[in-house]
Every structure is written in C-alpha cells, then in structure tokens.
Image (cartoon, rainbow, N blue to C red; front, side, top):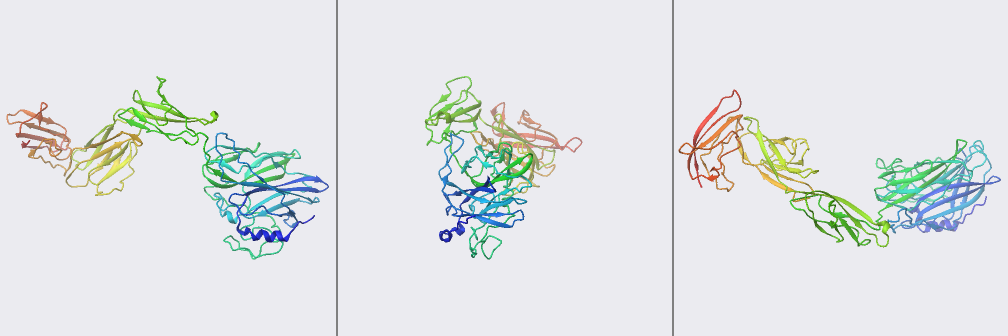
Amino acid sequence: MVKKLHLFLIFHFFSIFLLKATHIVGGEMNYKYLGNDKYEIRLTMYRDCYVGVPPFDNPAVVGIFDQNFTFIDSIWMNFLGLDTLPPEINDPCVIPPTDFCYEVTTYIDTITLPPIPGGYIISYQRCCRNQNILNIISPMCAGATYWAHIPGPEIVAVNSNPVFKNWPPPFICANKLWVFDNSAIDYDGDSLAYELYTPYTGLDAACPIVTTTPIAPSPTTCSPVVSTCPNLPVPPPFTTVTWNAPTYGLSNVLGGVPLAVDPITGQLTAVPNTLGYFVFGIKCKEYRNGVLISETLRDFQLIVKPCPSIAAAAATAPDVICGTNAVSFLNNSDSTISNSYYWDFGVQSINSDTSTVKDPTYVYPDTGLYNYYLVAYAIGNPACNDTFAGTITLSDEFNGTFSLITEPCVANVFTFYSNVNSPTGTTPQYVWNFGDGYSLTGFANGTIPGPPSSPGNNNGTSSGTYSIPTHTYPAGSGSYSAILMVGIPGSVNCFDTITSNQITIGNPGDLFVPNTFTPNNDGKNDIFRVRGPAYGKFYFAVYNRWGQLMFETNDPTQGWDGNFNGEPSDPGVFGWYVRASCGEGQKEIFQKGSVTLIR
C-alpha cells in the first residue's frame, strides 16, 4: 500500500494554528469489498465552515487494527474536494437561517486486507468538536473517532457495510417537528436495523492530529496530560463522550420532545426546544441470516436554530374583561413577512363580526365566552397563511364582599367569608390585609400553607383558604380594619377593594359601649354599636326619650346608624341596653345606659 505523506503539508497544517481548532461536526466510515481481498475505504467528514478554523485534513490518516487492537497499517488519504450541505428544511412555510455553513468531503482509497480471524478495525481520529456543544461534557477535550469493523471469515466470507443515503441537515428548527430519512442501503442485500448510540471521543486540543514524528503537546486543560503526541493512529478500544447529565443523555440528546429513530426505517423525529449545538450518533446494524455482522456509525452535530414562519400570526387581548363589552385587539404578527389580515371575533349569531384592520376594537353584543381568531396572509404563498386563535371572557361589573364571624367570646380569632362574582372559568386572586401588619396573597381555592412572612407587626397567624381565611389577631385589646383586594389576573376592570367595619379585640367577657357617636358619613364613629367579643347570645336595643324602639339587633357586629324609618334622627340623648352571654348555660351580662347623637 502506498503511504501518501508530504511533510510540508503537516508543517503548514500547524502553521495556521490548528492545535486548538474547532471544526469537526461529524463523520462516518464505510468499506466496500472489491474482490481479491481489496477494499475501498470511504471516510466522510463534515466540518463547520462558519465558526470552524481549519480546512479538512490533507491527508487524513486512517489506522488499521486487528481484533487484539494491534496496529497493522495506516492509510494516508488525500483530500479530493468538498461540497456544502444545502440549507434545506422539510417545511416550505419556514424561513431557514443563514448564519451557518457546513461542508462535507469524502476521502477514498483502496487497501488489500487478507482474511484474518476477528477481521479488522478501521478508524480515524481528530480534534476538535465545537466548544459550545451543550449536551456533552468538555467538548474541546472530547474529539471524535469514526470507525468500522470488517468481520472475519468465521462470520462472513466477504462484506460491505451499509451506506447512509442522505447527507444530514446542518440545522433543525426549534419548537418544530423535525423528520429526516437517515436510512441506508446495503450492497449485499443484508437486513438493516437502526438505533441511537453514544458517539466516541478522539484526539483533543493538546494533540489534534496524528503526526509522522513525535511532537510536544500544546498547553491545554484536557486530561490525561501526555508527553508527546501520537505518530501512529491511536488503537482501540475507543472511549465514548460523556453526556451532560441529567439534562441530556442518550434518551434525550436535544431537549424538548426526545430524538427518536424508527428501528426499521431509520427515520429520525424530534421537536427540540433549546437553541444551540448538539451531538448525536445513529447506528445502522446489518444482519445476515439473523446474525449481526457489521455496523455503520454516523456521528453528527446538529444546530438548533430559530426559524420564523413565512407568515406568523399572533395577537394579544385580555383574557377577561369586566364591566364593558368593548375589546381592543393588538396584532403582534410579523409585519415583515405578512401585512394583510382577517379577524373573526367569534360571535356565532352574526356574520358581521369581522375586520381587516391591523389592530381593531370590537364591541361585543353581550357578555360571555368568545373564541376569536386572526389570519395572517403569507405574501405570494397562500399555502403558508397562518392562524392565531384565542379566547376572551366578557363579564358584568366585577365586585366582591366579605363578612366575618368569630367563636363566641373568642375575642381575637375571626373567620372571613368572601363572596366574589367571578366570571365563569376564572379563578380570582385574593390579597388580604388584616390591619395588624399581617397579609396574605393567593388564589381562591388554595390552602394557606402556614404563617407567611410579611412586613410590619407580624404577631397574628392565619389558616384556612385564601377565599375563607381564619385570622388570629394578637392577644390583648385593640381595633383593626381588614381590607380585601380581589381580582382576576390578566384581566381588565376585574378588581375590587373592600374594607371591613372596625374589628375590636378585647378579653373574653369584656364589653364597651361608647357614650357619643356622630353619624355624618365621614367614616369615623358613624355607627353606634357594642364593642366586645362575638357573644353566643346577644341582644342590643336603642330607645328614644319617649321609649320608642329606634334600633335592635341580635348580631354583635351590627350597630345603629342614627336613622329611623330611613330618616336621620334628631340630635339628642338615647337610651340603650344590652343582654349577652358567651353561650347556653353561661353567665348573662346585662348593661344599660345612654348615648348622645351628635350631628
């Protein structure tokens, strides 16, 4: 066999700083039996010509080993020219990216290999992979090995391994289905099967190529550190790359919907969701009479790119609107590739609920749930028109209320009951401020996990759900006003704020009745009521000077607003009395007195 070696090429190779080059993106090794113990060896290599530095090797050094991994011979294969992988994609409605370049070359030579037990291993090693590969560890130190096994005569008399039919694509699109025919043909008519495999490492940045004479390695962080670079092809066994676990592995090499291969057809499918560079391996196994005789290994780097659609429809509108039926829609479609639009606002009973305005405003005839859609027309390519669909809920004016109760004579524990007219299908968010520096924020049916941290005097605690919380105020006496802010996230006008009457905290059995009040609607001392715990049994009455009943209640949270029969009472002195107890069988409290109404 002729070894084609030109030393000046080797020195020139290093003169253009190849020692730390990053350009190898894939390859595969094939052999074809020609007769008379001769084999045609084909090494197909792929390189990155966009961010990669060096050209293809010239020559490329292929090693020959026996079954015991003993070096037998080498082939120095000359560079014969290259092609560029086309930026093809299996979606006519997608704009392919342009910031990439992959080249491919095939080295071809012949060698005589007489039959020997165990056959031959043919291999080629190179550094380096692109340093920004995401799914393997230390890609600059990984390198690549492309190899194949020629079986010995104890397996088959002669064989040619399968050849992949199609060049792989240099890129695939993020968040879009990728389908690729990675099938192979076999010159001998053997049965073929396909599976993914973990690619192999090779030479690293310290010693990127095989040289004819030993040279010192370049400085690098790769390990193990060697004293001299190899002057012969490195023998098997070969080491596989290390996946960047747990995010990536053989079961998920791209992220998103995992890369899968049909074991019968060789078809690859995936829906990647992460941009970047990714390495994978696909293996074609050949069987003869049910016996595995050989394999073809393809190691390749895919780039996952964003791929805009020729027409990309997108729109923004509130999910829920309260108190109005007028809706403004914002068209977010890509105006550089589409400038003609059609809206249907989803009113089933009429046909006039449409518009061709880019950003329309539409007044719906009634409240309810509507399904609207927007069509963005592709310029010159109707088959690529794109549609965006959305829903919107229109509701009456949003409002809420809440009430509170406590256990009889438990002065500082209150349960708050909210009542919110939320639109159908929505979940309101509650923000409670209990007036003691303690607050809660959460969604309607969420269970309060425990006392949250909040600014202020956090002496209270809460439990229950966010729509019905139970709050324990600090022990002792004091007065508080609770505030509820409730609304629908992402909505318009669906918000309300409610403030409670004053909450008075006292010791069990304590009772206080003021001697004056001023019902002038200024929010201060407008209501005349008993201050104290929530009694189990309670009666409170107010009389004028002639003994006429002006007000009565059994609810300790209610009081007199100074009106009688809907009319304001004149200023003056009024009598009152209260009977209360903490419950059945408990001691009854009875008090009476007078109060002055001031206007």
